[in-house]
Length: 185
Ligand SMILES: Cc1cc2nc3c(=O)[nH]c(=O)nc-3n(C[C@H](O)[C@H](O)[C@H](O)COP(=O)(O)O)c2cc1C
Image 1: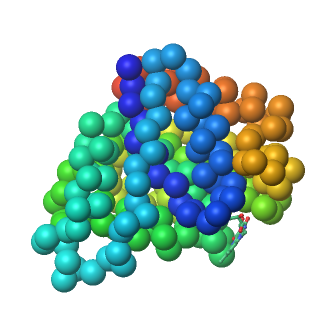
Image 2: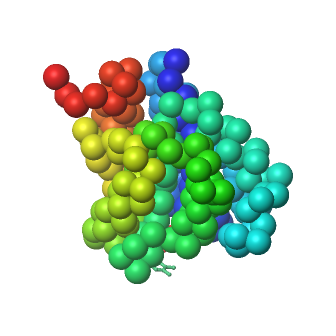
């Protein structure tokens, strides 16, 4: 069994990214379990606080430390990453030398109301994972564009194209993790 610790980059009521993560949790194939890590209680990061982090940060770190992979399900803000999720990642990587994210494989998903999905934001996340010296999943990529058309009013993924893409993405992610993140044969 491979475990994925997922972080959602939006806590907006009706968030498309949360809806996409919910779909991924529901559609995870046998052998893959996706568990959402709660980051809503994280305060703004300050180095004044990092020596004794709040309970929410310690709980999130403990969950990630038992995971084979971190999954960031992130909106794109201003062609970059949303501060809410960047703040969480900054906490999870500190204090300097903390091993929670170092070397931990990472995968990306995202949904956007626009036509480019979140591909520019995903490239920014890849840059950050370079710092953590960890492999980033690339065998499949998935961004949901024009998200209003892909989800119904209850936040269910209803686009058959994206459902098929998500199933392919998750199966390929599991295969990648089972190969210890090695390149395709
Ligand atoms: C501050 C801000 C910046 C945004 N910048 C982008 C952007 O650069 N690219 C994009 O595709 N959508 C952008 N959007 C639109 C988001 O894709 C849209 O608000 C989306 O619903 C956010 O994800 P959520 O539904 O999970 O909250 C932006 C939205 C906000 C509020």
